Each structure stands twice: as C-alpha cells, then as structure tokens.
Image (cartoon, rainbow, N blue to C red; front, top):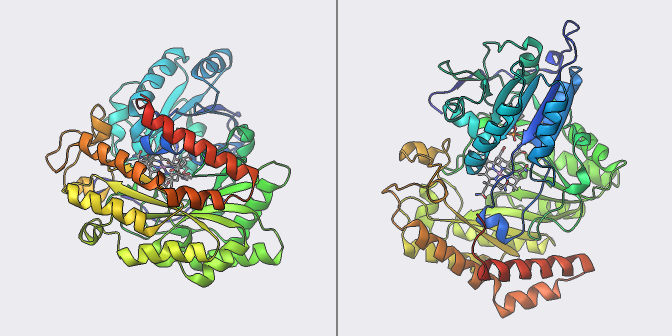
Length: 479
Ligand code: B12
C-alpha cells in the first residue's frame, strides 16, 4: 500500500482508557449481508460472528459506552436496524465493508443515512474501506472511514463526537490517509461475543459440523507474501498473542455457552509455532481438549506438531494449495512445491485430521491448460473437501497493484475487462463447475466419505453437502 503509511508502534494495555469527561455514548455497529459467494454457497455458507465488529464493541464497552451489534447475515434485518436507529438516540453508526459486498453496502448506507438524525455520525471501516476509502467517502453517505485496525480510533472518535478528530486512522473526504498504530493484540479486550446471538452461528458442511461455532484470533498480520492476498488492515509484521491469553479466551468461550466448535481465523495458525505449541501444551496439560479447525500452510505441516494438534482436538485444517502449476505457484509467491502440498494433506490424514484444500483458477495470464493442471492436482492431493475459487483482484493485493488490476464493482466478480486475463471469466467459471463435478462425483470419493461417517452429525453434514451440490448444478446461481 504505497499510499498508506503507518507507524508500527504497538499500542499497549495502558492506552485503553476511559475518559471520565464524556457521557456514555450509544454506538450501533452493523455487519452487512454479503451476497452469495460461489465457493461458499456451493459448500454451505460458513457462518461466523464478525470478529472485527466484536473487537470494536469490546473496546467501546471497556471505555464505558453502550453498543448494539447487528449482523445482517443472520435473520436480523435492515428493518430491525432502522427501527432501532429511529427509536433510540444513537451517537455513532459504523458499517463494515467487504469488496464483494460493495453494492450492498452502498444500498444499506443510503437507507441508514436517510434514517439517521443529522447529529448522528456515520462511518465505514473494515477490509475494503481500508484499501480504498475514497470509494466509500465519495458516496457522500459517510462522515469518515476508519482505516486499519480500529479499536483505538473508534474510542477516540466517540470521545470527540460530534466532531470528527483529525487523527491517524480516520480518513475524511480530501484528507490524508494514514493507517493508525498497530494494536498490541494481548492488550485488546476479548471480542464482545455476548452482543450477538451466538446460537445463530452454525456453518456449512465443509466448514463446521452442525454445532454452534465461533472464531478466535491468535495473531494479527501474516509473515507470508502471497501476491493474490490482500494484506490491507493487517499489513506489517506479525504480532502474536500469548498462549495464556488465547487459552483464557478459549475457556471464557466454553464456560457457560453451548459453543463446542472453534475456528482459528488466523491466515496461518502455525505461523507462530512457539505460541501454538505453548497453547497446545496448556490445553493438553489442563485436559481441556475441544473441537477446532484452522488454516495451515503446506510447508509447516510437521508430523509431531500435527499429532499434538489432533490430540488437542483439531479435526480439520484448511490449506491454500492454490494451483497445480509450479511456475504459476512461484509467480504468485506461494513459496511451496506441489509435492509439499500432496505431502501436507497426507500428513494431516496420518494425524487423523481432515483437510479442506483451496484452489484458485483464473489468475492473470493463467492458461486453460494450467487450470486443468490445477484440477488434476486437486484430485492427486486427495483432500477431504476441495474448494475452487475464481481469482478476484482485491485492491490491496500485490498482484493487483503490479498489474494495475482495478476492482470492478459492476463486472464479473470484480474482474472487469482487464486484458491480463487469458481466459474469459465465463470459461473459468465453467472450468470451476467441471472441477467440482470431477472432485465430488467420484465413486471412490463418495465411498471414502461414507466410510468416514462416525456420527449421525457427519451423516447429516454429508447429506447436506450432496443436496447442495445437486442444487448448485441444477439451479442457476443465486444473485
Ligand atoms: C475469517 C475470514 C473469513 C471467514 C469468516 C468471515 C467472518 N464472518 O468473520 C470466511 C471463511 C467465511 C470468509 C469468507 C470470505 N472472505 Co474472508 N477473511 C477472513 C479473515 C482470515 C479474518 C477476518 C477476521 O476475523 N479478522 C480479525 C479482525 C480483528 O480483523 P478485521 O476483521 O480486519 O477487523 C478490524 C478492522 O478491519 C476494523 N473493522 C472491521 N470491521 C469494521 C467496521 C467498522 C464500522 C469499522 C469502523 C472498522 C472495522 O476494525 C477491526 C478491529 O481492528 C480475513 C483476513 C484477515 N486476516 O483479517 C479474510 C478477508 C476479510 N476475507 C476476504 C474475502 C475476499 C472473503 C470472501 C469474499 C472470499 C470469497 N471469494 O468468497 C468470503 C466472503 C464470504 C462471505 N459471505 O462472507 C478478504 C477481504 C478483501 C476485501 N477487500 O474485501 C480478506 C481480507 C482476506 C484477504 N486477505 O484477501 N472470510
């Protein structure tokens, strides 16, 4: 992000302050409903509470303010939000963003702005707004965009209301855009999970069993440089939490709730092996095994570590294998070999852990032959579930910047009409359809899944998966 600069000084625990000078404010935070994504609709939408908003809510509550969180991906709907905004005095409304939800965020912003009292301030934040704040500010609906990690900035903003303070992290029309100081993750209060109905979150078959589930973070930032991944909010060096703090959060989640399933939402859980090993040690020593899944990386799948993870309850690892063409893999800076991918899946299986493998088709310059190699490779790697994504040029990704790929809010899943794409999007999508058919409709695969059924839950999972696949094949894609 050339045009963003940031101060890398972490904010310490002492800087979470409560100002005795301001009256408690009322803040409403909203997660937009995200239109169906092909990959996730096929495998059943994974449903997790929006951790970003819950972190902000926790910081605001700690500073003495009153917060209401709405997640429009739940049966909570816009009418409920609007009724709440109209019936209560609200000081600040914040709306989350995601590139794939840009149009929807625009519609929501218009309705919300219309319902707001002129004194109420309205801001956007999150992944997409951080990398292109102007796209949101230019709509005229928002008073400001909070870029980057916003726990600290939102508290400062609230303390200054109705003014919008000119500080790093707050972008206003025509102003400079500077990321705020990074949060020191152990100092951030645990996400305010009590503000959402946690029992509403259950995932799709490839993601979670049919149990209540929530996400948890062990570090911010990622040390790897995959060219297609947008770093944006979490750019910069990795900042890890301590094992003790993570363990405390796990215990807090499990105590007094029906959540029996956790998803570590770090880009790569094993990126900090020291903290992970300490955490596993704590879980095993205190006999607190629980069911969990995470994202891994093919070159970090050490048998001994996997054994410990399995003993501590890990039942599934998601791996970004991305492509079956080594030259392309190197070009996107994945820094793994194809053999490592196959070996990683085998090692997880040896440890008794299931594997979800992610693949991406349609990179700039990628040929049809290379995409076919990826499909063959996905069969060879033999994961338990394969997900095939269409490449999308997120604004903050290195590849988008290098090739000047602009995120297109109107056209073909953000890809627009760039000549960098060798194969038209419709053809890539047809190959993705083919990939799903080849992967999931194999007698050997179906037989393997049936033999793996150990519980009625898994049987229901698989039945749902089969129905979803048949439906996605038979029905036109949801708009
Ligand atoms: C977990 C995760 C998922 C999960 C669950 C999402 C959820 N509901 O929580 C799953 C697997 C379902 C998922 C799906 C997708 N994801 Co995702 N996901 C993530 C991941 C790894 C972690 C998100 C998280 O919890 N972060 C932890 C919190 C603390 O950080 P945060 O969310 O950034 O929040 C901070 C700031 O952004 C800010 N903030 C956040 N919201 C708001 C709101 C306001 C008002 C304000 C002021 C500030 C603010 O303050 C927060 C605290 O500091 C991120 C990458 C990452 N490392 O963050 C990608 C990421 C968010 N996902 C991304 C994408 C593209 C997707 C998909 C569209 C992929 C696809 N092609 O299908 C789908 C969307 C599906 C859907 N229907 O939602 C991109 C977004 C890029 C963009 N420009 O929009 C990211 C950044 C990955 C990447 N590097 O490219 N995802």
